[in-house]
Length: 376
Image 1 (cartoon, one colour):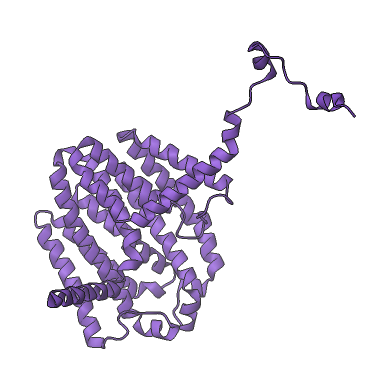
Image 2 (spheres, rainbow, N blue to C red):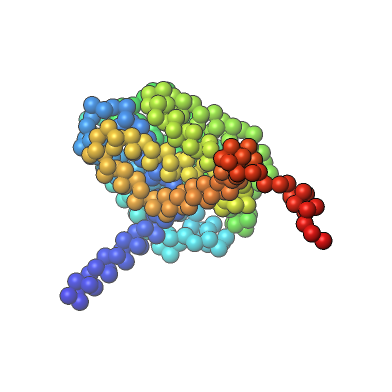
């Protein structure tokens, strides 16, 4: 029994070590929900596929995209080993030798590309999109291209690699290309570039210490904020609106989600002191509830309504981001409480004098008259 416990402990240690290498905790909660969003929409568009086929397709897509995302973070850690050490930032590959680190990155790339090819032998186009994704991720980090240090190209390449290509892989694999899927890809592109701008702004000081040339170090954080507020966010909002409109045309029930989120957003803005977790414009938190929780979960519930076999996907959607779902629930409770505290009392008024008199009882005298009649 002790040997079994030792093997279990050793296995868990290896899993944690692997998670640290690919920086799993840094991205799974923000990347995977959007993959599910695309899968759910594609499944809704193709009811002929059936629940079990979609479940199998979901497993294949998750395998391809998770290995791809792992490669993206690994290759970035590999290329930034020296600068991260100089800047005092943790880097999981910094302690490795050059040969071992290079071999690790190459093995993950080979496994990801070979897996994509084998899993989609019948759809070569999916493999082509995956190869393009790997090339962009590598070009973002690796010299001599290293788009990361080539001004605005770094923002664009990072956004495409992290947000756009996973969606392209999903829609190409499930053969769903319509106005909504194209709008979703545009929305994710703007979101990805916006997130890269925020990331570079947060890393500006460490990048300056390590002499890394980014938009934040060369043009400054105010430029990134102006770019976000005046260009990226408006374009993202336009693409988001079009995505919801096109999607609601096919699935009118989505209007419920839109109305709910607008109400939630307005009440949070109206009561900033009562509701925690305000959504700052220049931060990762903007629209995080919609993107990561409400929208994917609502589509999962629509799938479950159509076929109860999809309840497994709905449960996965809740479990894979339990902390986000819990925070969303607390936010909804706080918003509802603030809303009731402000408007609820207006809905429950005391009976008027006319109503009391109609019931056969004399109306109460006004406070001034009662005070005057009081004996001195």
